[in-house]
Length: 200
Image 1 (tube, helix red, strand yellow):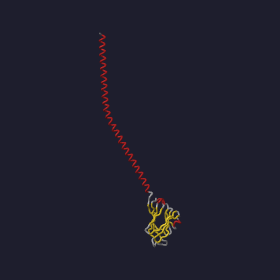
Image 2 (spheres, helix red, strand yellow):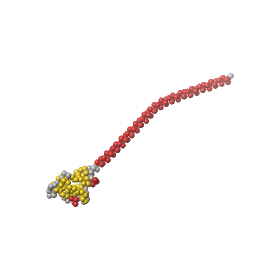
Image 3 (cartoon, one colour):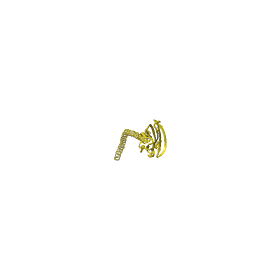
Image 4 (tube, one colour):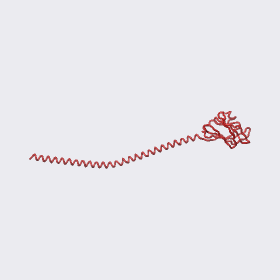
């Protein structure tokens, strides 16, 4: 009888222990569920800032790309403008001389000499010869108010306009000499030559 009583008490203790373990499992499960719910809620809140961060990154990348493109465009335009300015300096048209030259004399422009070979005041005409390093390369006759152009260095031209022909001990012509498509700084020698090209 004593052993039966002891056995009954042990069964009760086992039942209590089993019941307590089951309660702990339910409590732990409940805690885990609550934790999962909280994590789920926190995860939702965390996703939004991440999405905002990604959106901000895309906007920044877009702005950076636009800025780079704008910079490249500006540099390209800058290069185009610099080239145009450089080309403009190579093309010039200017009057080199406006004055008188006596018949038999000439006017030198670098290696070229323009000789006045025959000036006739009565008819208002004058004849010219063009020499390059002593070699005759062109000749022409023009009247007052007319002009004539001949080839010069680097595909440029020289235009001679006869303004007047006056009488004197030696007839004197009034001429205008215009240089076209040539850099003004390329003229290193110019002026009236007494006696023409033979004395240049």
